[in-house]
Length: 184
Picture 1 (cartoon, one colour):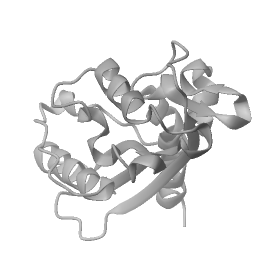
Picture 2 (tube, helix red, strand yellow):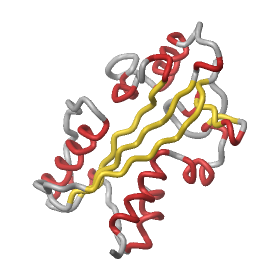
Picture 3 (tube, helix red, strand yellow):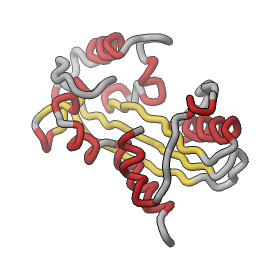
Picture 4 (spheres, one colour):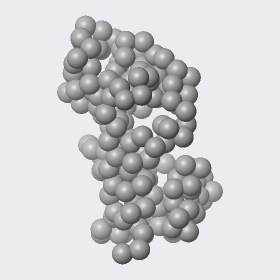
């Protein structure tokens, strides 16, 4: 929330968590990141009566044909921990050589003016990297400890928060959203 509000401050927009409005989570039944983001934004707008921003994010690994993709948070099963998901990913890539361990974080962010908005604003951020063989670093969450960022020679979990926010898929999508919502 802090990152989102910092970036949107220039537009004089304040973002509040959906928990402030007792918004219940919607089931992510979409087959793509964008479908799931729209489902979440529509649900939040409908329950709060306000414009809503939602995203769906995940990691795509080329050697796994884009998996875990939209199932990133539940790759090792519903209720799996970050550690369970990491372990499953590293196991799946066990015999894959370094040059074929390319991956990317995807973020599809959606802004809906209201629940029936027929033209939501959709912004995409992509962050390219390589999957390591072992987790490294204490910052971040999810797949950050195995997502190596070549231009910084470390994993996402080893980057300071302010650097990660500049590079990240979510930060990219959010900055695109600011451009879309800004003065025309």
